[in-house]
Amino acid sequence: MLRLVDGAVRPDTAAAVDTSELICQHGATTSVTSLPKRSLGLAMADISVLILADHNWFREQFAKLDDLQAQAPTDRAALGRVWRPLANKLDVHAYIEEKIFYPQLLKRGADDPEGETLDAIGDHNDIRDAVRQANAATVDSSKWWAAVGRAREANDDHMGEEEREGLSDFRRNAPIGLREALGRQYSEFMAQHPTSEGLPAGDRDPQAYVEGIEAGSQPKPKDYSLGIGSLKGK
Image 1 (cartoon, rainbow, N blue to C red):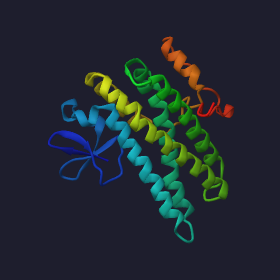
Image 2: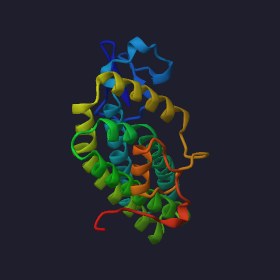
Image 3: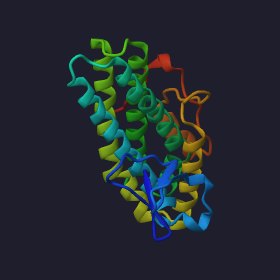
């Protein structure tokens, strides 16, 4: 969740973060997109803050799966209620980062933005592959837990690198007006797409993606079945 404090929207670290909603000072919940722009302070509009908020939410959802796995007997319905929105948001989050954040990082970044982007797209492919494998398995089966574990590991690796590298680089080198504009696009897109349905959220060739952005166009995502994965170690 996000919390409205003194007219500005800030992450509520005591609760799960959802970029489409916020908690007002009196406890009422409202949609971010329903607020006038003057209510959306810098902490809300900056895309780097919104991405970090989603990262916190991802970590909390995987922790919920830990808690549910520890229960005996395991509640499959409860596992599904946590996993389905988590799987969807992992895909949507990766899609919108590739659509609006990484093209701007390549233009504005100063600390090897090409390398940062290659790593990120490869990580997104690994996450997408694992999410797809989990969705194809029976919830609470050994195959499902293995795929969920792969999604978590790939996502943890991606978030850590992105927070240390891409997001830090962007905060230091992109003008605040651009970060705010991207933040508005990001929050509106996430609110409009609670699932990945209809999005071409397939694997991308990392090198072709970077070359396409630098040439002024974005290559289309590849078919899921390609399993392109990461360039790390290659």
